[in-house]
Length: 152
Image (cartoon, rainbow, N blue to C red):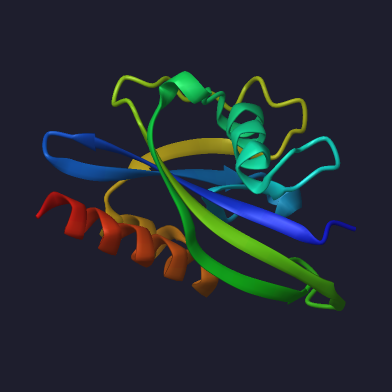
């Protein structure tokens, strides 16, 4: 089982407003909305390297699509399985933010692992309503705070 997970909050600026990318997991994997998420693998050289791989795998986002990266946004630990609620060995999860070009084309069709069946770009308030997990919401809030300060 993975010991390190990452959450990649993808956002873009359109018409002076930020939108956040959410992916809906297939029913067999919970059927809930979340950012791009995944685990660090042995082949990854760093957490950021793992994030770039996950972005490509899950949403077909490449490094050239990325304008800006927020590292070390939020951190939390998981000790219960997200579907069963059973106790599991602790997983450390790190949240990073990625601004992409507004014209970036998102695609879940190239993912060899069938994980998601829908994508949406949504405003901050709608993202908070759609996200299921409090830790995902907390990471999103921290990124939105950074974006608010960046815009000032």
